[in-house]
Image (cartoon, rainbow, N blue to C red):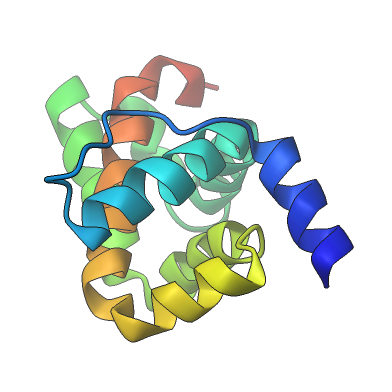
Length: 130
């Protein structure tokens, strides 16, 4: 497992965001683990969301910008199957130690993960055009 963990850590890259002595364990996990994974997986998230739109709600492309933002949020918060697929894309790039840390507080870390992913997709809504 050491080889896998070393590869994953190096592949993902450096911490993104500020880490200090005052940072909570959730903040540390967010900046050291979640942010680099979300950045690395960005193109996959875009492709996955475009697939989601095509499968379920092709009318997304006709929505106003505000309605598109709401749709992104609702899709990730309410479609459990889609949400779990997105979580899997992130969790699959955890090291063993990160996974152990994640399971201690998965509920709060899932909220952080999904909120960051929602904001990431919203900020790139132009890439979701047909």
